[in-house]
Length: 296
Image (cartoon, rainbow, N blue to C red; front, side, top):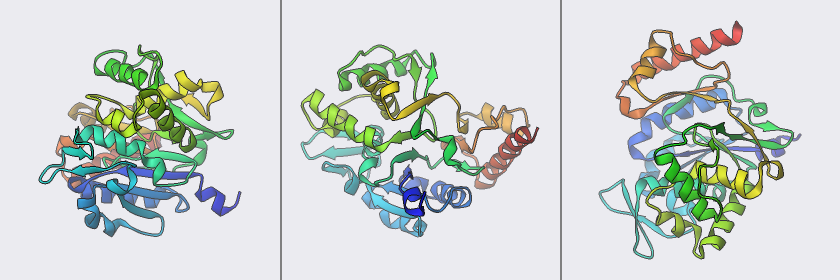
């Protein structure tokens, strides 16, 4: 495989914004340390934050604006990070706009596989393509029987509505970190949503009160295409150890956390309010726990 074809194989996608700049800097440092430089890293941020993130640009990293990537006209409301306004006058919550931005990632790169990398995480081990590709197929994060309650059921119902398929729980949860999508499949899904809803897919999603891009894509692959006819294979193996709350962080700190040896990244939830040094210490400890299991 030539270096050019390798570089077209994978793109890392990070959707961020001004308040997460410092976290994104630390993420970028870990990407440059642990991810082969032939794979590009695309940062997608609101236009108003673009200049702040340009300091992170290098040979493998580009920074583009949300407004230039999303194939529709959205304006971020002045003095607010939480609301956007569509050209048709419909207000869109920032959380939903983030889903639209991720779904637009295929317009920012021509790479075959897209990996979504949040600003809250850092790599602790090299990313090997074999972790996300098998026999030409891309990894689909899928945990059977998980999260079959609460808001997740609403996400499954909304996905079914947008896709024109069964709105019941799909049998698996598709939400996680370092999620990978096949670009060709993503673009086909967007076209199908527009056809099914009778309106541009961005507007169909913008009008949703609640939606999950990961469940939407997972259900498209498994329910609309069928996993055996798709460009994916399913796996429940998690590539990222997540500290969503203080108890999980405490377990890492005291060495009792169960960090899977397959984990190549660690996420520290931003609202836990750790200092930069405290986060660095937690990530270092998680790395040591994971490395110890690999060497055992």
